[in-house]
Length: 257
Image (cartoon, rainbow, N blue to C red):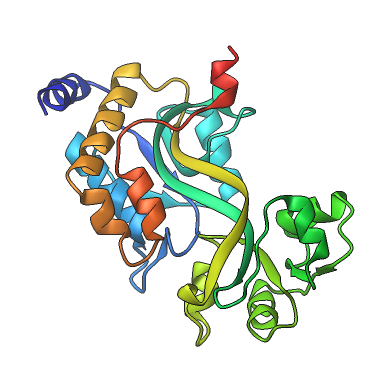
């Protein structure tokens, strides 16, 4: 807390920060009054309040927000996947989200997938047309793919036994369940194909003292249960538990430097 207090005093002399996000429910969206809300947006708004950052969150199309954050000055963009390509394009605060993608099956089905090649023997994998997951499997030569237009069609096909697995992520599936009579507990992750960590990406001109203040404030919000309070009931418990401890995940491309 003393560290945060000292950083806050130093930050008081800094430049205002433009904080930007995109429409991405359930994390960020407009409410009926045109206010940006959602559990991730409210978490960042509380972080701004504790860090003494004036202003509010602006919702823009992703491409425009990304351009602003690349250009600056003093722009914070969330929630942004931290990748090797983007590593030196921003300064990073987080993680604020973890997304696990893979093959989901009906909870009652006795299906075990030890390797991705095992999935070639499944009676159908559904991935909506144009999805990165479906394209990845197609590029690997999978011939047991079903690719309907909408992702919710994959859920229906899975629950009716027309396919054995659904290629999606633990986050992307949530709004789909909200539109149906099914529960997210009706399916389970049988094989994880990817894990991505999402951050607040700050433009490179942002002072290090500001970045450190945001990170220290976020870490404190993890320790005091604020992150869990905002996320519980919306995001998977496993994700919340993983994010509730300060620190960064292993970032392979940094280890290589």
